[in-house]
Image (cartoon, rainbow, N blue to C red; front, top):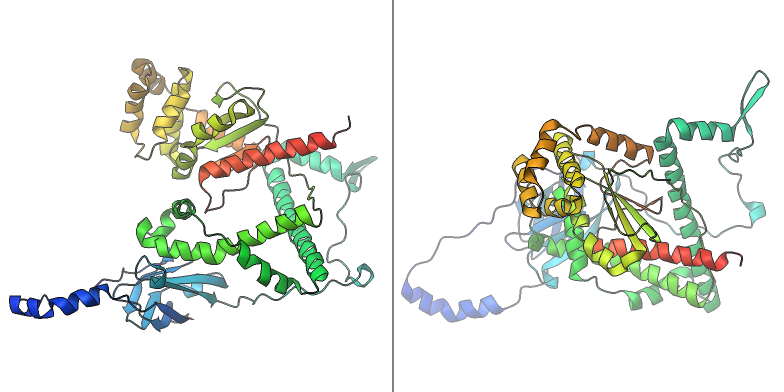
Length: 473
């Protein structure tokens, strides 16, 4: 969500001179400076479509409050101790519920949050009790055709749905994969929600309470405050949405977001996992779409070919998100050793700048020094043409050979070929990861990238172990 206007300015009164006045007021000033301020309070927040503003009523906002809406800093038109008016493009925002946070300092009493409804967002309602299958309403969509069902007839030939799907995969694999992945994700979410609801209903019935009462009793015991590493990871994931606000400025809003949006959900997930281990078995056996990844001598590799887990990472050295991911590769590979193999595939995302970095990386790879070049280029810095030509000397490349490679345009066609290859796998954003051919979900914004990679690897190792246990002996 983008918002635009001015930063609120802090107003200070005129300086008071005179040594006698300073001496007279010194003691009381010191005492008042140490006295804690009353807690900040937010009572309500009312959006106004006509003026594209959000009026916030409360108390003890202070002289320079900082306001965010779903972690986007807002500009203020009015800043009083009991009322704020923030600039918000109400008309352009999707209907929904947003988290508003007002802060004046780093302490818990210096911030307060409230949920704001914009547009005609329906209020959540409890799921209705399930009826017996015989009383279920008819489905909205008739069953999908099976692979052997007819899709078309031409002369004496019948073209089946399976024939159509195979042709679709052959002629446009990217769009086919994208649709299959979307279908899988929807099915996985619904399956997860259904099994979670059943687990909670079973436990609630065993205790003779409602599922809502069960959660109200159990979740507070399992809420764990997120560490500062989660707060920093969340801040870094926001990118330009912070509108230049520093981490310390954003810290109260980030903490409020984790408390209101993340910690309760993680507590519920932990409780459900406890029920799975101690009460009722649950297995979600849906299989996500798999990709057979092509191999090329142009792909830099770290790790043994026999590794149990292969991570194929699609990256762009110009991407800050990729740079954050790349900085933990060595640590993660060091942890898992021969069990993990990392393959780098290029996916340029920033036009000519990305193409230049891709060519430079390919020239470094031609000398067998891609990863040294990669690690230097992925450090936080401006990766312009001057920097690209300076890195080879830093990492021990043959500078003359590197310059000849760039000047001759040896790998000039590499970016377009890489983009076409990624499209065949249904991959369009950098960074993206395939874990043994399965497209990994994007990292949760609160999760440090090293932990994100570790969880992907652990989940794949556990999946393989479970498959081995079920395999016939």
